[in-house]
Amino acid sequence: MKKHSNLFILLLILAVFGGIGLGAQERIVIGGRSSMMLADSVYLFPDAEKKIVAYARGDQGLGNFITAIDPNFKNSVWFDRNAGAEVYASFKPDLVILKSSMMSQLKAPLDALGIRQLYLTLETPEQYYEDIGALGKVLGDERRGAEVVSWFASHEAKIVARTSKLGATQKPRVLVARISTSGEASWQVPPDSWIQTIMVERAGGQAVWKDANPGSGWATVTLEQIAAWNPDYVFIIDYRENSSKGAEAFRKDGRFASLKAVKSNAVFGFPQDFYSWDQPDTRWILGFTWLATRIHPELFADISVAQTTRDFFSFMYGLDESAFRTLILPKIQGDLGEQF
Image (tube, rainbow, N blue to C red; front, side):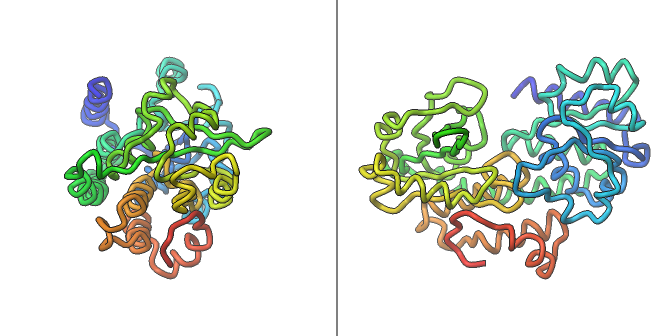
């Protein structure tokens, strides 16, 4: 966190003393891996979309959200997410926005070409708050940045204020697993530091896979390990298909028949629209809200995921009820457990 805070301070210094402001940024390029998360963050600032001239491809398989909300998106140029500095230079950008994971690959060559860059981490709630603040500074709209951060933080705090009072025996054992269908179906768990683990713990659950994945990416776990964990709840993630199907496959797998979650019918597909709500996209707050209501329905009986979802797309992206019903509602999948 200290390393990230230093990066945040550096970005603020660049914004103040380097002349980076919305007026100076007539040509913005969003690149690298996880570009869809970057684009969703940039589009939180209404005026920024007019400046974007090129995007790295970032569709996960369920569609591209930005094409739905920006009629000018098709006029932008798409390029490979692994493109080198020369490709970025060809767009004559005033600013390139990248994930911090791309810094080691692109910072030096882009610096050599005199191209300004903004690196965002966007991996945890705290990093979201810092990065959105930095983005507002760079885009010349600090007020909007502060409003967005406040919206996220207030919704998170409302949940954490309740779950933080729970004792250890009041926290169910929870498994979040991604279905992998390359060949025979298998199940993967995220690292401890990823937002999926953070969301489970802050939503009042015990992440049963904690300490089982010391790596930096998804790790496959055996059926025997899942049986040994014997979770009370199982939440299935699928980035390319309806997660409800993955949840159904898990429930019907005879090898899991003795699990508490299966016996109590507590296996659910993580909600999705264009993107799954489990990952560190702007939608993480929706996934977090849904997770809390699933794990502790009695504790959050007053919170409507459907209404929170409408409020989110209205406040974050300016979609009224008609636009929500046209653009978002048809894409919503997973086991929400609530009528929209």
